[in-house]
Length: 431
Image (cartoon, rainbow, N blue to C red; front, top):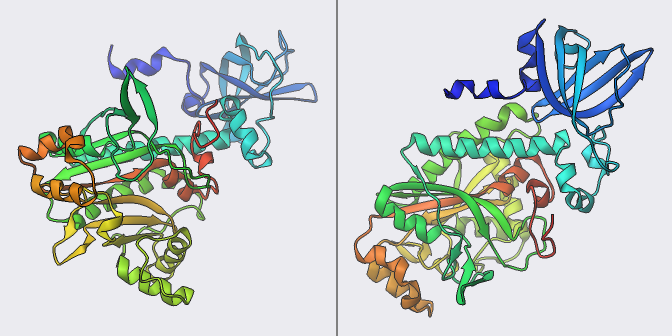
């Protein structure tokens, strides 16, 4: 069976019906809404690709309730007054399943009428709402664009363990798990493995979950999120990582732009502006009328100000901040040769919020031993990771994009939980 014949296995999707004007077709979906008007019955049918209007003057052989799944055999009829310019006539309905209880919400109503807790508690049902479904279709398109950009650049997709024997980010909280009587943790990132695999494939990427046990109950943090990771060998410095990231971000934005309205579409120049961490602190000190030169990281309000400044100054919704203090970056971060207290690392801010962290990594074994010792970490705990560096590793670096945060910033979603299918935070383990 050829791949081109896969569509023939299934009923026609609603998005494809318009290409079959005048033909008898079969489609399937949920009953979205039913309206009786002057002896005519209008049925709206919904599937994952859209909504189509079905028109009949004949009484329905059995009552159709909203959220009933049906198979419909009907004729495609052009009708300028119908949604999409066509409708289905002379339908024959076959019921596939019926709801066993009243729906908790009318999906024809705007999603904004509900509260966050209600939407999350009833997520298995509420995710059917066309508005919310569109959010996650754009997340899917973003991931496809991420993959497409890196595959075209010769990257290999990898799948690394999510149960690990040691913490990846020194100092970060981890989720312990029972693992056959041994100490283990949920992986905070694929960092160690993607570095190791740079010694195998040169360029690698992964799309997968990561877990952070940090007790943050904010609108921008999740305990589990989807990380889009990339790592590449034979780089000169972190600026080459930034150039690759820029291309990836451009392709991701381009992929979803046709589905965004003018207020959502981000300003993304060919060259994303770059500012040093020290310059950022200097500008922030002036803007906030206080001395911030001693700070080791950017607070959320500082990122917000820098986002507005980048938009006003460079007409860009994106801004690179590079050269963070080495002491605030993970132990594997490469220092700047001309200023060892700063790092060859960066954050990418998107509309005033950190979206990406990346940089160049250490690649010499002795440097790893020194870095771990300086942070009072025992190199023996990282023995399997350090093995790759004992046998030689090229200069390399990479980045990680938070998918949910990208979608939230892109669509103007205030709470990141609305950009996660089934969010996990300090209080939520279901559904």
